[in-house]
Image (tube, rainbow, N blue to C red; front, side):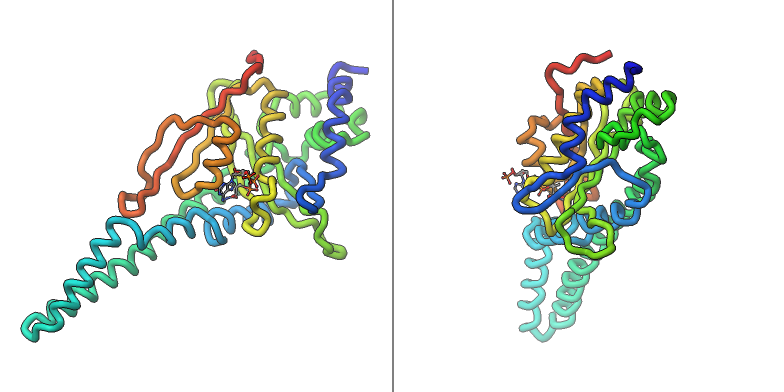
Length: 291
Ligand SMILES: CC(C)(COP(=O)(O)OP(=O)(O)OC[C@H]1O[C@@H](n2cnc3c(N)ncnc32)[C@H](O)[C@@H]1OP(=O)(O)O)[C@@H](O)C(=O)NCCC(=O)NCCS
């Protein structure tokens, strides 16, 4: 038996748990490596979770907009304009001001929508356009054997196994196994990626594309995805995991804080009207031996 085969076999019991799925709050779920056939569903899930769906950063920013300082300025202008309406000689000015304030508010909402959707599109055009290629998972059966404990592992040529072992990048999806869809694929309700390609240091990687379907949140799926990433990082001697988030992702920030991620900096996104900040976080994994 080669050393690669024995290493894979020793991880089999942990991997087997994933093959059979887990029950979380009464739902049968399975975390598995991404396959190319998942592409459309993962992209749709990302767009819903980050863009248009309930609880997305765009929706939260939109709901917060009426309470931002800039919004109070438009209310003040609008209120003054209404007062001017009572004075015949200023009526036209009042009309112009109220129209201007209402238009500014409406246009800003449109701008916010466009900025958020452009951001989603830029993600869909980057790593999410080719997840298999970007995360080194395309047609690489060794990854499935590694993670899922498949029995055919011994049949794979050693060069495929070694390429999977040297690639710490990975992308996972969460399948909902309990949906009764006769003849249909299981729905994908979560995803996350670990990406070392932007980090020069091989012991550092970035956690990206963490999303859970808006209809399956607060059931522990996000935490399960984080634990999957952390297990994988430890296995591949990744000692630091970076990530970015925004002020309009309070659930994510709370979850990352629970796992020990620490903020390392923030900068304003868009403009000061929405008060949206890009926040950077870092987690050092204790006990990981870097090469
Ligand atoms: C962030 C996200 C992935 C969390 O997924 P989830 O499955 O709901 O998370 P979990 O149920 O595992 O929650 C784990 C912990 O995180 C915290 N948390 C998660 N969502 C929260 C929320 N909306 N408000 C407050 N705390 C929250 C809680 O501490 C929670 O533990 P608890 O339920 O025992 O209190 C999900 O809300 C999401 O997809 N959000 C939109 C996309 C996004 O912001 N992604 C992050 C990119 S950086």
